[in-house]
Length: 282
Image (cartoon, rainbow, N blue to C red; front, side, top):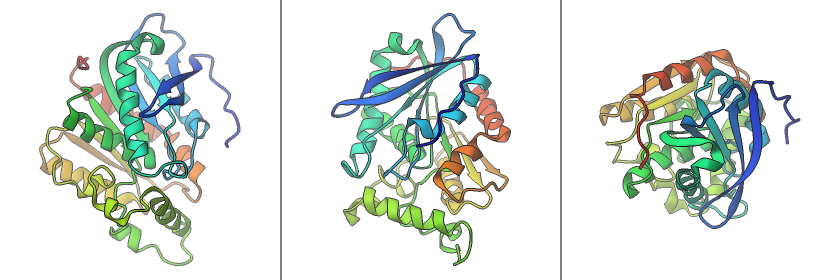
């Protein structure tokens, strides 16, 4: 677990309990301390950890920085069932259930119920992408956008940026970690082609909310992120793709450190500003 982050004075920060598909989950609400009324815009965020690890503390520093950059938003960061407890599809069902819980429990979050955006990093970005698919397929809730930061989208590990990692490369640990994570998350090999496990392999990408996809120059996950962006675009989904300059990503915590860089915060702020006004979540 990472060391506790010092919370900036202008960031309000509190622990709550939300409900997943089968029971309660730990969650954390971030809001701008200057706000005295309910926010019209909510971002629900899922942490990384390769489906097998990770917790709310891992991305705490990044989310404090993010809510400072987005004073009109309230952020809800939620845990989900890890693969060691239950493999796929437990995590995605939790993630979607948290979105539905948020819609029903607006007052507890400090949200008016208008604009809803889903986001995540690495495995959490996979869950965010899948939430967009599930929300479309099941008809709720209505999402205004999706923010995918260095997403894990290809259990087959088939892209060039993943296959070209060589022995001795500092990113080899990242590639090996992805492989081990998928073995834990998808023990049934047949599930690896399921669109809710592998969004990159989905043949139905139309009618999804606008997407921001952030990749990193030296990240083995880079190509799958960019291929997904291209596929969304070809399916008529408004998609913004940005490749960020290389940062150290040798260990899991470094992904969140990379996300703290000003470029990431700027890209997210710009993307959210392009969304068409407050949409009413159904």
